[in-house]
Image 1 (spheres, rainbow, N blue to C red):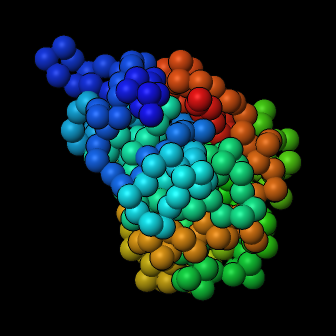
Image 2: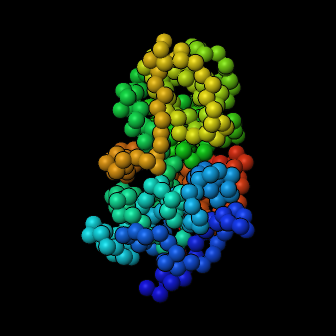
Image 3: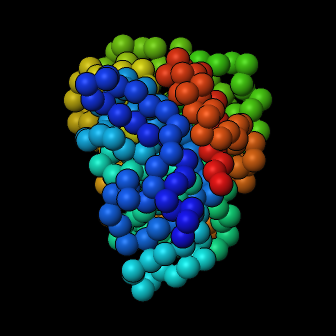
Length: 331
């Protein structure tokens, strides 16, 4: 195909000329090897993309690479018999924009072992409103329920609730039958959080305590910020409740005691979406297309941009101005 000889990509370099990223023209030969080639329809912007695109985080393992940890589109060529031309597919994580070229390009070449056929019930655009953020939120719910989290234990707290993972977690958790308390430092967005499923919107001050144990307030939760807020959430979690940790927007540190763990049996559950086993990955995408599908995707998708809009979104995200989800449209 002639188009594969020259197409647009947002590429990241780190060499003698320094760390830089931007739009350039590349060909299929510039991409990593893989069994499946797709024409990209959509990608998305995650916190990890902002770190990679600006160099503020050590995300990429080698250079240059096309950015974008999420991608969705239609197959144009495949050497794997499971995928045929025209199939709608997606990939989130799995080394994209870390060890492999990612989704910020008009074409992507992918390893077949990580390619997911678009589940019935999702459009390509919806799959990227979800993307890694939605997959992470759903994986948190999957692991919490696997560890016997039930609505009867009490409300689930979601920190960093106006961000991508937080917003989708509010919707997904409430869809699954849990009462959700959204915790945010942006009181002006209370109506937004309630509109997507939060029964209560609380300020960050509810997690300002530094004591090792507090009165029970939550059945468990999902933390996206790290640091003292995670410590406080653990101290306020119910007997045998679970707290999933999925982000470090405020801090990568955790200064805590063992008291919530040995007195109340609280579990701290790590969420590493990029390394999720294929069988669990398939199961979660089935849920996201069905019983866990957020009902407010159009509200949560607050922006749609092209590749040229990425630097501005990265800057806002790293400055703490994340709000909902940003979808990247290609083609």
